[in-house]
Figure 1 (cartoon, helix red, strand yellow):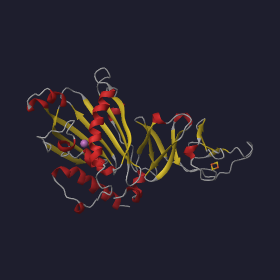
Figure 2 (figure 1 turned 45 degrees about the vertical axis):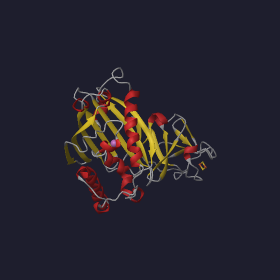
Figure 3 (figure 1 turned 90 degrees about the horizontal axis):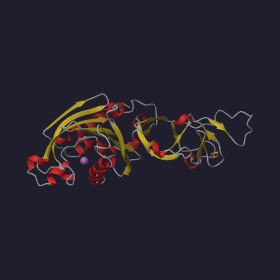
Figure 4 (figure 1 turned 180 degrees about the vertical axis):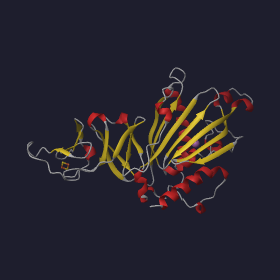
Length: 330
Ligand code: FES
Ligand code: CO
C-alpha cells in the first residue's frame, strides 16, 4: 500500500508541526501525503494551512511572512487571511475592490495537544480523543519531531507487536526470557483497535544491581489504542499508580517517509521525574525501533499472503484488514 495512491488518507487529521515552531511572523512549509503545504499563525493566533502556492504567479507562500495574521507572498506582496481570501494587493489602490477569485484554498486546521493538526479534505473522523490531555492530574511533555524513512503503518504495527521488545529493546526494557506477552486481548472500535496486554519486561535499574531475575522483571500492564490510520496511544500503568502514556503519530509525508510526532503524558510532577529524563529514556527506546523500522519495505502489503505471520502479529493483521476494508469502500 502506497499512501499517496490512496485518496482516502487525505480525509484524516494529522499533526504536522508543534505550535512552538510557528513564530508570529514566519510561515512554515510541510509536505503531507505528497502535497506541499504552508502553515501560519492567522488571526487571534489560530493556525491556518493552505497549499504552498500563490494564486498569482505560483510562488511558494512559505517563503513569505506573516503580518497581522495575514500571509504575505514574498513575490509581489499579496496578503491572504486564514480563510484564503486575498485582502490586500499592494498594486491595487486601497479603495478599489479585490477580485473574488484572488484567493487560495485552505485546509481544515486546528490546534490540539500543542500541535497543528491538518486534514486535506472533508474529514471523516475526529482528531484522536485523549481524555488524559484535559485531566489536571496529567502533564503533557513534547518528545520527538523527526522524519523516519519508513511507512507509517509499520510504525503502528510495531507499537502493538509485543514480540519485538526481546530482540529490539535490548538496552532498555526487553526481556530475553519473555519473547511473547502473557496475555493479549484485542477489540475493534469505531476509531480503530484497542488492545490490553501484560508483558514481562526488564527494570533496568534493578538489573544493574544484579538482583535475581524474579526481582528485576516487571509484569507490565499495557493499554494500547490505534486510531486509524497512523496514531497510536500506549498507556503503561505501573503498580505504584504512576501512568506513562506515549502518543505517537506517523504523519505521512510521502510514500517513503513519515514525520514522527511523539509526546507523552504522565501523572507525576517535575520534582518526581524530570521531563528531560522521561524524554531521554523514551528516546533510547525510540531509536531502537527506528533502526529496525527503517530497514523494512515501505510498500506494506495489505493482503496477508505476501508476508508470513505469527500469533503476536494479530493486532497488525487486524490493522491491515481494517484499512483494506475501508479503502475498498471508495
Ligand atoms: Fe504571489 Fe505574485 S506570486 S504575489
Ligand atoms: Co519498540
